[in-house]
Amino acid sequence: MEASRYKSIIQRTGLLLVTLMLSGCKFALLDPKGEVGVQVKELIITALLLMLIVVIPVILMTIYFAYKYRAGNTDEEYAPEWSHSTKIELVVWIIPIIIIAILATITWRSTHHLEPSNPLVSDNETLTIEVVSMDWKWLFIYPDHDVATINYVAFPKDVPVKFVLTSDNLMNSFFIPRLGSQLYSMPGMVTRLHLVANQAGDYKGFAASYSGDGFSHMKFIATALPDQQSFDSWIEKVKSAPNTMKDFADYRELAQPSIDDPVTYYSSVPDNLFHQIVMQHPGGMMSDMMDMPSSGDETKHQHGHEHQSHQQMNHEMNHSDQKAGHQMAAHGE
Image (cartoon, rainbow, N blue to C red; front, side, top):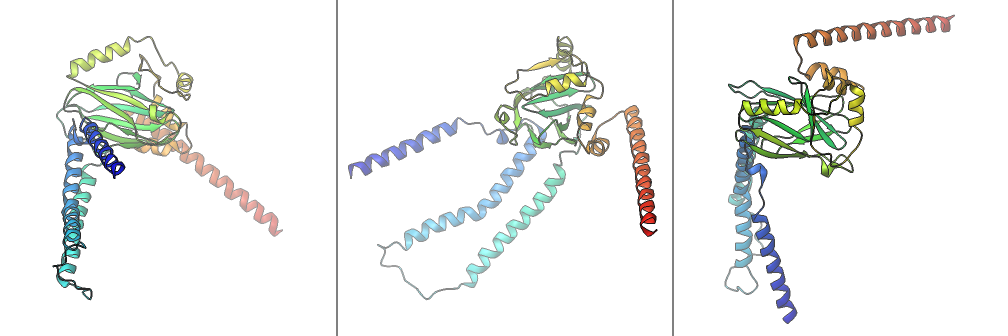
């Protein structure tokens, strides 16, 4: 009896401690600092409340019936032959169907509205940042400024940011919880994620997909600077950094697996570095042409490559057909 009492006290104390510890946690998804994050939060809360319409009554009825028909209550009517109620059947089917229909409608609309590749509506010009997930660090390239950073990204608040993502090796997932959606980065492919921070501050970002030994260390800081002037000053600071990335060989050296890399600035990067990273993987050309942002000159350059690729493919197909024809003729003889 005494042991049972102590066990109960320990359990209650443990529950209290867990509750106190959880009260200090900050749930980033429920504390958004950007337009997309706010919409994601509203979607989560709306879906949760709709599902609770079913969950709460079930929990309450479970407690009610367990108490009502407890062994010590001999006053309640006992009906062992009862097996069906049309009213109950209507309630347990119609209400969930209505909730599912509402959830399906909300999900359909929000899926299209929150599509990561959709540009955000803003009076400010969109800032493009190219992102490469590596083993086990993040490379951020600023194509309009010819600089890059490791495990740190900065941008002005209230300015839409277009993150253009790829991976150097394994597939990964880019996630800044307080700003909004996560998105996969894949080798040889390009994906696009539009986010905006409406409040200046430092926000934690990390890899949301397992990618090997250093996965848990793939973290970075995303800083929303107060204004454009602060961002320009930061860019000048990066441009004065001693580190440079002269060519793709330097990039390959950087891409070697490593853990806990410090924040590093590169004052210069090779032209079209992101393009080269995508193209190093088989099949990278097609996704690169379709998804990569490019200037007019780059577009012409890419179309030239596409035209040459088609010519080469047609030549190889014709050569293959001719070879097959010769073989069939020789076999016929």
